[in-house]
Length: 464
Image (cartoon, rainbow, N blue to C red; front, top):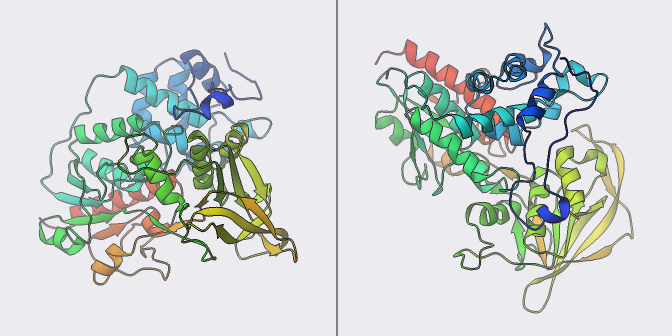
């Protein structure tokens, strides 16, 4: 029976005052009955607008039709044709601005909960399927992937499915890139990421960790060692700061360092080799998803008060609406239209507060958002013993400086052909945050797919 409800099925979740004290996943996932009921809201539109809104072009109506019938494994196989990371995408992709934004049901009511259905299908497969993916016949041709984040894993998976001998080189000691060091456990359990990586390994993908390309090996050495093409998906892990007084005080973190210590190093444990400060009053500067992640982690570490300090209004917050809502429910304080001018410290060199000024919104700037303008004489002091800067990241310059002839933007992003991901170096491709700067998981995956297709076309034309 069609479900003509104007609202999505609610996502079961932990209660706010319970979850803000633990790192277990917030959203609990649909039951089979909820998934089928939600799938029945899909109209199976003839022109399939949702597919056009997906950066990896998943056949969304097809997989939803299988969910309607209760054929959950068949639904998974449809998704897996286009996505190497369905359980990840179902959790962290901004569906509300992509596939769901195109859904016809969203014209009069809420769109079909495509992301929640994708998550359900992927989790069902991971819980029930025992069959290893079938390996294709090997082509005997080698491709190197630099970085094991979403763009690198997607490129690796697509090439492995075609029969290429793929090796992924990861700088850290654990594969997954931003999926393991950047996104907290309560949004994306690391067991989910590991399961996706294990699936790629079953396809034949090799993963070498502790391999800093540009130090241990260069891109040129990879090509000399017999790899016929290289994909650079090394991400954007270089943090930005505001360059205001006091940023060198103890208790000031980049969001990158803070989240890496919490997510990858588990530094909140008492016996951690890389401990983290258990602050009482935390100020997080920024308004994106990373700022929300840092603030919500700080709350779970026991902070009494955690503030988001953002220079624009709530309307301009770049974070997903769901993340903002969850942060508010968990007790995060939003200090909007405020901007830091100085971080204050005590005699021991630790953070004691942050000086802020009030802002008002003026005319739109180059980004189209209204430019924040400082209000004269509006200075105030926010008490804090920890400040986390979450104002963006850029690509690490290591690969740029060790790869001769690799052209980059002034800010560090690798320059590529948009249609192929090809860099200024023959046989060297790039995608994801290393090209665009910090963006979304699904856009990075789309870039990995584009490059995989172009690499395949290039190697098919090139003689062995």
